[in-house]
Structure formats: C-alpha cells, structure tokens
Length: 558
Image (cartoon, rainbow, N blue to C red):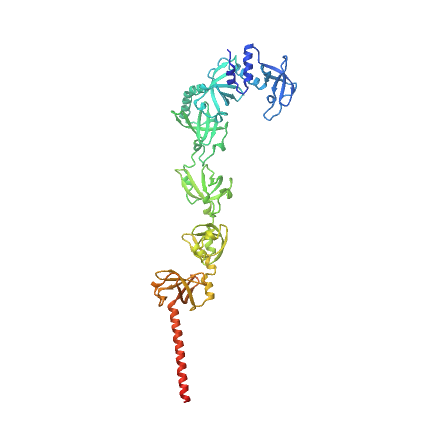
C-alpha cells in the first residue's frame, strides 16, 4: 500500500515536507529510510552525520538538545536517523517517532481493531489531529473521525486536551496508525451507560482518578466511566476551589449519586462518603454560643472559620471589629488564627452559620459614655464629610458635627472648610444612649460675633443700621460695625409705620439685648424714643428749676 506525501504531511506535520518526500522516495525505491549513523562534526547550528553512504548528511543541532538546551550527543556517538534524500538532511527525532510507531504496530499485531488508546492532542492540520500517547507514540485522527466538540473549537482550546479514541487502522507499509474519537464515543456510550447504572445501583464508594479540574468541579474516571463531582459536592464546608485542591492524576474516592440517561452524565460526590455534620448541629450550637474556631480562608468581604467538624462559619468584615476604619479582613486575620467568636445565626436548612468577633469586644459607645459627658471638650479627627456636616471620630466613636454647629456664619459648610483627617476641637452637646448617637458643637468654643459686638457696645447704646429684611414679626437691619444682623420687633418700631419701611432705609434705635450664646442682637426704636423723651423732660425740668431760683433770688434782693 502506497501513501501520498500529502497524507504524510497530515500524519507527521511537525517533521515537515522534506520528511514526507523522503518517505515517498523511499517507497518508490523500496529502501530502508531509518539508518544508524555516526556524528562526525558539531557546529553552532548544524550536525554532520555519516550513514556509510557517498556523502554525509546535515541535521539541525536542536535534534540532539534536551529541554534545557544541553547537547545529548557528542562527536563519534552513534545515532539513529531518518533520511531525507532530496535535501540531503536527516532527522533523529523523526527516526525515533517512526521507530516508536513501528514498535507499537508490532505490539498491536493483527488484533488492533477498537483497541482504546489515550493521549493528548499535540497538533492540528488540514487533515485532522495528531494525538500523542504518554509513551510518545503518535496517532493520526482524521477530521471525520473527530468528535463534533473538537471540530469547530479554536486551536488554543484543543492543543493539550486529553482524549480517548479507538484504533481504526494500522498501516504497516506507511508506518502509521489511524484512530477515531467518534468511534470510541459511539461504542463506549452504551458501555458507559450500563457501567454508570451498575455503579449507581451498587450504592458503594469507588476509587477514581481525576481527569479534569475546573471551577465548577472535577471529572473523575472510575474504570471506563467518567463522572462529575460538582464543587458543591466536594465538601460540607463553605466554597471549595477545585483548582486549589486537586490536580489531574490525583486519586480520590467518590460515590455515584445520579445518572442523566438522556445526556449520559454521571454525577458523583465526595462529601456523601461522610456523615452530614449539619444533621444535628442545631442541637450542638445555638445563637449566642461562644465557640473556638480556626480561620480557614480570608477573602475581601470576610473570613471563613472552621469549627473542627467539617462545618464552616462565615465572619463578615462588618462583624470583625467595632472600628469602622478596617476595610480589609487580611489586616486583622490570617489563615490558621484561632479566635473566639459568638454565633449570631444558625440556618440548618440553607447550611449557613454566621459568627461575630466584635460582639465579644467592648462596645466603643459604652466606653465613650463611661469616659465622657455632655459639655466635655474633646479632640477628634474628621472621618467623613457630608453635605450637612462632618462625622468626627473620637475614641472609636463617630459624633456628628452639623454645619450650623460648626460655624457662626450660616453660609459656611464643613465641606468647604475642612477635609477628612483634619483634627478638630469640639464640645459634646448631646449623647443619645438609646440610638447611640453623639452630637458635637464647635462654634461654642469660638467667640461669636455677638460677643465681639458686646465688647464694643453696652445696653442702651444708640445703634444705626440699614434695613436688609422685613418679616411678619419685625425688621432686620445690618449694623455697620458688626458681622451679625439686629432685629427690631414690630412692637419696638415706635412711631415708624412698618408699611412704609423699605429695604435700604436707615433706622436708629437703642441696644436692648445681646444674646452671646444665640448670637443675636435686638434694638428698639421705641426705647430710643422714650430715652430721648426722658432726656427732654430732664432737660426741661432742669431749665425750669433754674428759672424759679433766679426769680426768688431777684425778689430777695429787692
């Protein structure tokens, strides 16, 4: 039987066209293409081999290098090579491949049909796929004999994939073995179904070998049957990463759990081999119990803790500490830490157990109330700034400083004046124990505009200002030398007709009140008018006394 060069390209795509030509020529000339030669010279990139013919043949130096790039042969060493006469080149690796295939053909003999081989896909070409067994024997699988799942997939997802296939044909004259994945699946399907059913019906556990590891689970082979152990069936603990736990070739014990006859899928379980630790957990652990656990895994959102009986609890980052500044669980815990936690939820039906670490710690609010009282002046750092104010951290507790309690100037806001991390001195204005809230004040520690005004003016001083606002209850005037407004109530307007007052009018009155805490000033026109009336009366009375006295003196003289 004669094989074409194109077919050789399909069977041996990595050897190249020269080798295909060599085989073609060797078939024509009925010559032995594999010979033993002797290395005569080794250059930088070429090796010359003497095969006892008229001339020496060239060979690439990579043919005698190992995976680390070191030479495996020296000058004078004997070497088996395959000859390509057209290019006067030889290949040691090609000879070894041909030799391995020849040895395999000899081992198979005549009883080769439907023998199952296993290997990995190492190449893909126009005609199909090259599959290499663990012993290094290469088989050719034509496209029409490949499974549908392999035909249309990108090369990157196929190269390296392990498969099983049946031997279809052994070609001794061309030293090739043809295999079929499709035939293996067809003939093995019914056998798989029967075997899977028997495994399931037995109710026993079986030793298997891991054939594939994925995020969703592991594929395990039991004899000639392959089944899937989903991630959820690996352990009774929390999420287990198959990629971190298993590798191809691992031996595991599994128990068949179900068989989807329509899809031909066998479901397996590892955790079914053990007693369910959740079965009686509600009798052993209750909410409020304090238990000793070991940190088994730390994630960005929290930590998983091992109770020591294949049950895992979850410790959320919010339950790790009362300190709200802790953002990363790894900053507080590491795998292997033994800690005491309080059970805060036991959900047997959904296999969830939540624990808390901070519940065993003193509450910061309680510590704060023992140490501080209303009126205390304390220092803290701004933790958060909002549109309505800022939260100031004081001893692990955040107190709220409203904008109106931070500045006397009502136009100012914390977001405009401060930034996170700024240190402030504040006074404690209110402690709400029931709701665990603290109100702070800053402006009471700062001199108010009314206090500054009070240092320059006294009650009954005459104050002049321009009208800036008219309300139902009175009029606000802007005092020239003050940063606050003064109020004249309706009853204090005196002779002035309120209906005739306009914005910008100048009004003069007497200072009647300075509210330093409330930062308010009141003036009164009526009081100023009465003051002036009294002054006029006093002046008049004083003038009248002088006139009578003078008359009496004159009469006495007369």
